[in-house]
Amino acid sequence: MSNEIETTSSDSAEQGSVKSAALIARETKRRRTFGIISHPDAGKTTLTEKLLLFSGAIQMAGTVKARKSGRHATSDWMEIEKQRGISVASSVMQFDFRDHIINLLDTPGHQDFSEDTYRVLTAVDSALMVIDAAKGVEAQTIKLLDVCRMRNTPIVTFMNKLDRECRDPLELLDEVESVLKIQCAPVTWPIGMGKNFRGVYHLLNDEILLFRAGDESANQDVEVIKGIDNPRLQEMFPMEMDQLRMEVELVHGASHPFNLEDFLAGIQTPVFFGSAINNFGVREILSALVDWAPAPRGRDASVRVVEPTEEPFTGFVFKIQANMDPAHRDRIAFLRVCSGRFERGMKVKHLRLGREVKVSSVVTFMASSREQVEEAYAGDIIGLPNHGNMQIGDSFSEGEMLTFTGIPYFAPDFFRQVRIRNPLKIKQLHKGLQQLGEEGAVQVFKPVSGGELVLGAVGVLQFEVVASRLMNEYGVDAVFESTSISTARWVSSDDKKALSDFENALSANVAYDAAGNLAYLATSGVNLRLTQERWPKLQFHATREHA
Ligand code: GDP
Image 1 (tube, rainbow, N blue to C red):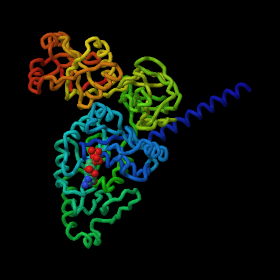
Image 2 (image 1 turned 90 degrees about the vertical axis):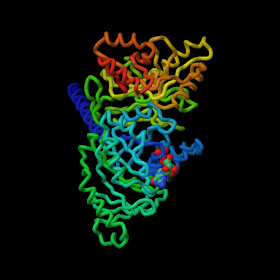
Image 3 (image 1 turned 180 degrees about the vertical axis):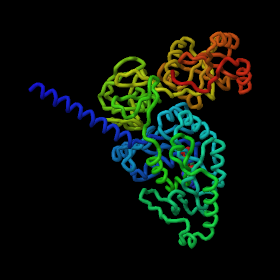
Image 4 (image 1 turned 120 degrees about the vertical axis):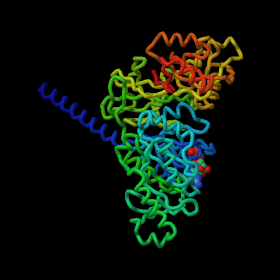
């Protein structure tokens, strides 16, 4: 009898486990996690809004935009979030499209540009690159694409604003290929532009999608005409069809055909043309993300690669945001789930501290309302409230010792020296900067010569944030002053003597960061190059991985 019971219970445990494995596999497969990379004003906000519109997540466009300009009352937001089950304007937006779960991670731009912008890209599986077709490849896009390249992230490209006079499409592709060093595989091709924008020709489906200035609804049907040789087209666009045929022939001859493997390897990007504000071309991008972009893949965790379908839960923190909601003074750690199934209330191990934490209060989206997460799978982002015990790069698991890699720090582009008005507060200053440095809000360098601390950032707003947090959280009134430093590199070498000689010889410009890594603070590009030439036994790095 007892035997029978035992058999039954172990059978059902086994069945449960098989069921759970199947559930995890199914849920992982239908997830797509991506971020948008673009230069300010290329149309990221507009496109985000239309993506949400197409997914049925919101009925009316205009909401994301309104949020950007801060015109909406908080209550409206909570209302929309309640109704639609999504958070429209937050750092992470989750929505459904064609039975897939899409996680769109915001990459803060404009004045908000900071290291977070880079780190968010370490948590995505693919990226959507938006280019203003009148301008072509711009500075911020170049930087962000470099970050994607570190992990060979697959990129889908959207050439936006075809309803305006743009640059020649072939020239645009050429620029992407030569500047960004990625092959272009056009999937749609524009017919005219500006006032004469007629639509796009879908090169893979051999059909023409006719352009109509969009309204703000998702149900707008695009008229489709099959076949480039369809006589109707000649009647409708006698002026444009010859030109299109010629261009298509050229494109077929000169550019790369779309190849899924090359796309997944980050070697090739499928290119779509359209107009975000007119809702034109957006559905094609969403379909490309669902059909072609990868579901969560295995991630390197130092000791081994963790597959997303493994049953035990794992994840890592890629961003920490403080005081997003004045009503909750804690910080939120953004964690990307890498494997298994996360359930609210489960116990997970904080691997750096070697401590178990019970995660009972977990939120998905930030902004004005916080939604409780019940479960999450690989690719999903969850927010863990914390009181300063989590750092960027921290790994979590159900017990196995893992350290997810690939969360980089980037050499700062802006520097300030920090001084305090009240010297009695020096201890608080150091404590505050140590914590803010660990959290990744700013990089803190301590010169070996003992001079004043140097702060480094990739966006200037970071300094303002740090100044206000020092004041509010640590009671320190700090003054930031400009310095002669223009760039920094982390320095390493197998030759310990060369390292210490370097440190002694250039002590005024050598410093340790918050994690104790040696860095060279250069006064100019020329100065950096000369130093590199003079110290051939040392390696100079523009990024460093989280220790
Ligand atoms: P972001 O800075 O990248 O988020 O860009 P926004 O979405 O705020 O767009 C910048 C400007 O470009 C705004 O004035 C938009 O209305 C405009 N814009 C966006 N998409 C299009 C488009 O397809 N055509 C035109 N003509 N303007 C657009």
